[in-house]
Length: 219
Image 1 (cartoon, rainbow, N blue to C red):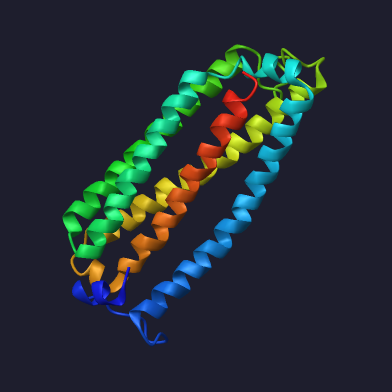
Image 2: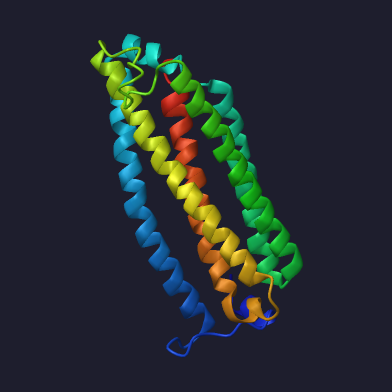
C-alpha cells in the first residue's frame, strides 16, 4: 500500500522508522525472509514425494488410492476462499473499514477451521483403513512395499506440518481479530493485517502445491 493511502486512514508509525512506508517495507521483508525458509522445508518434502511417485508409480498409486480425493479437492476450494476473505480484510484495512475487516477476518478463521475438521475426518478414515504407518496396534496395510510406505510417511509429515501451521494461523488470526475490533487499531497497527495476510496466503500456497503432488499425480 502506498504511503498516501496509509496517511488516508491515519496510520501512525513506530518512532524508529522515518516513514510509514519504511515501517511497512521492513515488516514485509522480515515476514518474507521467514516464509521463504518455511517454503524450502515444504518444497523438500514435496520434491521427494514427487520423485517417489515418478520412480515407483504402481506402489505410490496403491497408497494414493486410500487418500480421500474429494476431501483434498474440497479443502483446496476452502483455502482458496479463505485467501479471498483474507484479501478482502486487507483491502478493508487499507480504506479504514474496521467492522468489515473484522468480519472478513472471522470468515477467514471459520474457513480455516472447516479445513481442519475435514482433514481430521480424513485422518480418521486413514486410521480405519490401516493406512497410518505410525500405529503398532493397527498394522500398516502396505508395510511390505517400501515406496508406498515412504510416500505415506511423506504425506503425513507434510500434511501434519501444514495443519500445525494452519492451526497456529487460526489462533493468531483470532488474537489479531480480537485486538482489531477495538477502536483506534487501524491507526496504530494496520500493517499487522498486511503482514499476517502474507502468512495466511503462504499457508494456502503450501496446500495448493500439496494437493496435486499428493492427490492427483499418477492417480
